[in-house]
Amino acid sequence: MRLFAIGDTHLPSTRGKTMDRFGWIGHPQPLAEAWDRTLSPDDAIIVAGDISWATKPTEVADDLAWLDARPGKKILLRGNHDYWWGDSAAKLRRLFEPYRSIVGFLQNSAATVGPYVVAGSRLWTTAEAPPMPGGEMGDEPSDGQLVEREARRLSLSLDDARRKLQETQGLTPVVAVHFPPLYANQKPTVFSDLIEAFRPAVCVYGHLHGADHARAVTGERDGIVYQLVASDAVAFTPVPVAVTLRGRNRPGGPP
Image (tube, rainbow, N blue to C red; front, side, top):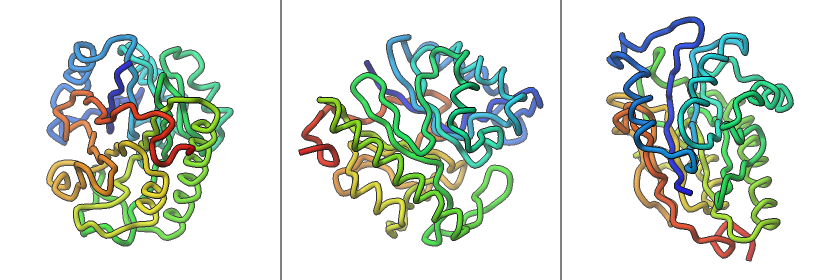
């Protein structure tokens, strides 16, 4: 099984919201074509937040069906624009149940697919973030309460991943978040500290668009590979997660 990732699919929902004004002409058709030729049904893919412009569950069904029609087993997590994504894991489970290729979601929990265990949360803009423009596709202002809440959610997900690593031999840990856990200025954040203590093979994230791609941390840092997978950063094509199967003895897993 190969593992891929894509973030910020920004599907139109029943609201019919297009991405033309952001220069994503014809979206999501180019993404569908690239996805369909890149993945097989036996692959897995992380969808790293900002999935849909829906504002409530009744508006998201067409977008979930669009995802389900694409090849690969999907693990979903929430982005800052996913207003349809509620706080009840039970309600989310019922929402996703008709879409058989959605095999997991991150909601204070981790998800296992094939030889991978994936942990993560939405995160938020931290005080350490460099100045970035706001607006609909820009950054969110830092909020200490939201950062604290997301740190708790990330901790719960990482703890669940640790339990799964203890229970199942040979899994490789991966972290998937929406906001960057750290930025090109290399200032540690509460999120990067938690992720580094877990020591996954790789951390994928989205959220950064256009000129903000320059604020991204990519490549290996302290033994963890960071990948920016926002759609416009990866030419609207799901990208292979840069992970080597290292199994049970991978740092961050059980001894």
